[in-house]
Image 1 (cartoon, one colour):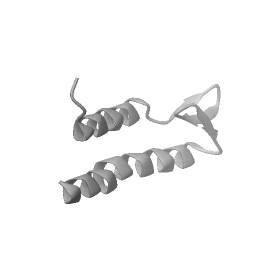
Image 2 (cartoon, one colour):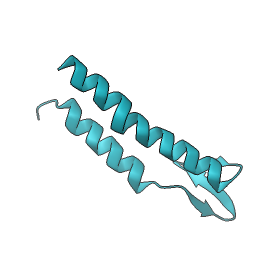
Image 3 (cartoon, rainbow, N blue to C red):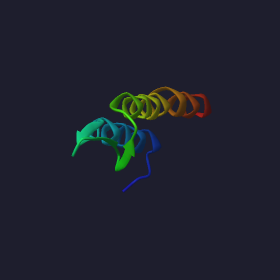
Image 4 (cartoon, rainbow, N blue to C red):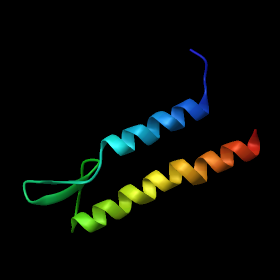
Length: 64
């Protein structure tokens, strides 16, 4: 299997999307971590997704 960082980043992006924040037993959760509110969990979700979609991919494209 060839190492392809862009494909790997796309898989990480999809993993983040597949783990959207949710309420579990009355507690906000995202990626196995409890948060004070669902809004806080969504903030982390959006930050992680934006990091992969924009920051990392942009860095990768500049180096290519």
